Image (cartoon, rainbow, N blue to C red; front, side, top):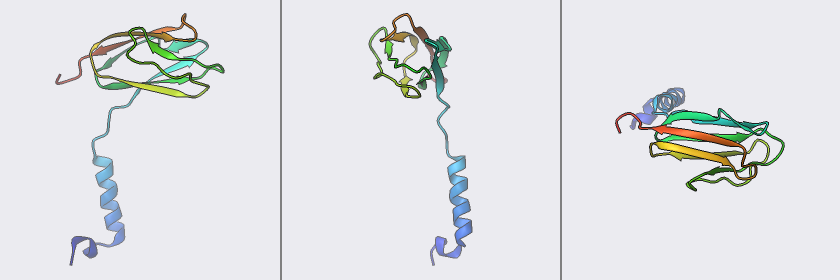
Length: 114
């Protein structure tokens, strides 16, 4: 007899659920909201390997673009999202390619153990 056949189905489901809950989980993403033609927060500091997610809350499109060209979104309609994972420490200024007066900065610090 195999192990699975000796346990009731409910016990197997419980074991799988516990394994899923105790598995390592990626750190939460950092969010930047686009609202009223501003990035909020305008500047954030994160650890390397963190993903930043921009969400457009305005009724018109916006495009997130790095001033150095390392990332650029498509035009984001209302409630659309764009994400980018910052692997390398440094300062990353960005702007809205459709509304260049909209600016923000991501400061990336070395992550623990790097």
